[in-house]
Length: 608
Image (tube, rainbow, N blue to C red; front, side):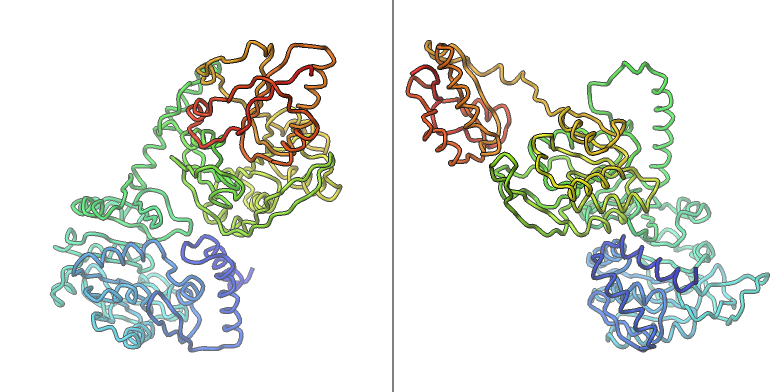
């Protein structure tokens, strides 16, 4: 693969994982950039935040700014937040053409010092500061190192990869640049740096060794290569905690890396309480999290020796969670699935739900995401009516979440769980094919009854999707039989029965009239597809044939279909007789959700 193709694909991957731009806009901008390169349409101007960046030639930083704007979205948002809290000083070490410096200088009260050693790149930096009329920026054309002197710097066309070289190297074209230690620059300018960004292509430890008496003055340092042992040792000796990674949308600083990795962050111990006062949640840094994970692995290895019959009855403690990062793709969170997703969340290291809609338009449920990590996707919606094989009309609510694949690449889960057999599952299958180490579980809520009348094209579509899955979860034996019939191996099928704990129903008082020998209760959606009129009619006819005592039949549920009830009434199914109203409040206390009982009394069925 050529270097240009490798750079193109690398940028595509970064766009896929970016927090600052959607997949389609980002790819469109990147393709436009490739056209600009091919036609050599330079110089040009790009937008980054509220600033303009002049670019005289294609380069790595310019390509990222073009496609994603604030390409280091999380770190740049954190820097903007920090500089807004009073008069602060930001030092940009390895400023390149000025992306961080431009964003920092948008805060009027901030003082910005931009340091760039390469003469040509420094010229572009100065031009960008001048073009944006920033009066709060000082630009220095020098390198930082542990002592004053002259250093050899590569002189490559790609500005973002120029670096300091050692005398033993033969890197090709080079230039010589002036170098000073960090403490000398601070003393000459009379500044006390609050926040520092260091991106010097491998020369980070030498820059840190030049801090001198300023090594503990900074509050936060963003540093490339911050996970290297030499950098960590210096930071911890100077009183900094880290490395951390910032998740702006969660307002969280912790061990979890961003989907598109950004430079690690070190925070001085004295500044951690102030960060928390800004509302930022602070978790363990990367090294401490790794240590905890090692302890969990050791504990789990001991637990594996226990009897398999010992099943815990409570949710696992956080340290005992299964070390799996999972993504669930579904349309919405329903009241009956909420406990399942909460239990799964408490059992896994990470579970994020990607929803097509906050709530279905035909549902009267209150939205409840308690304890869940939820993101609502970009999605198209359509509704269609189709005739079921047995004569009734079915309304399908169709969701097309078109950003599922980019989000999967951004979050890079170990396991993807996808509900239904539509567009979202297709994207999950494509992700599984590319990321072969991942696993795919598909949830199918159909049965032999609901899937009647599915044509050969849709059947083949489902067969193809399900064969790509590692496991398929169905809600009962009928669903399993349907999948086996269309060619899905039984070894892939897992039955997870939908069931209800009946204990709460025992609280309901038993009330029935003396005339009613039998009392029947239906709980479910009151829609045509449930066939309630046929059930009630058959029950009435049966009772007449056997000349039995009357039976009381209650129907409780939502989405009442007037056509169904009117049909029952017109056929003479609803008989006169004694009746009782179902205690709606009892059902509400069981579910905790808004449910409505039929306004009709319980019909008494029996011989006329």
